[in-house]
Length: 160
Image 1 (cartoon, helix red, strand yellow):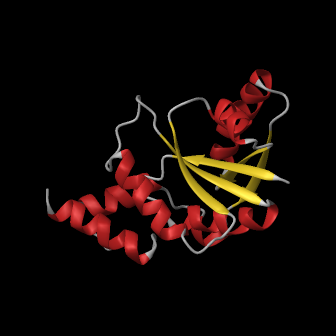
Image 2 (tube, helix red, strand yellow):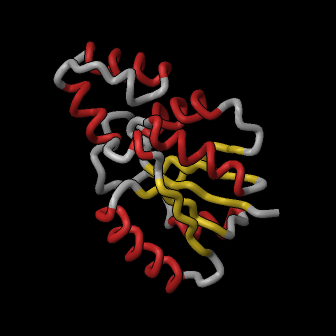
Image 3 (cartoon, helix red, strand yellow):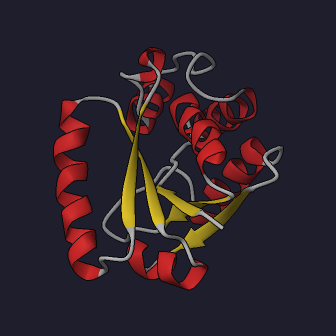
């Protein structure tokens, strides 16, 4: 059984993330989508909110399971039996960072490899931080995130 692991902060999950999950789910018998807890990152949504949003968006994929993680990616892969880390690439700048992380992870555990998928061109500019910035200034995020997420993002900023 091929098991993949797609980590991210998903703050919030975007259409670009969904694109990677959709294609990654075809590559693996089981794909874990891990909502990562990174104490050095200030998130807009709590871990619980992010997990709930990601689960809602990905509920129709039978071989995808959403999990939460506050440990090293390779350590969580070992626990879950994942042999591959799935990562999406938008541009050369992503590649530079991901190249370093891949080599770092392989030094920690050479049994876990990384698979890269280029995001669809229509999402190559998209990031969670750009969605948050747009929402912060009252912009329409609906073209960039799943419908259920657009509603949650709008409500979050309406409260502020």
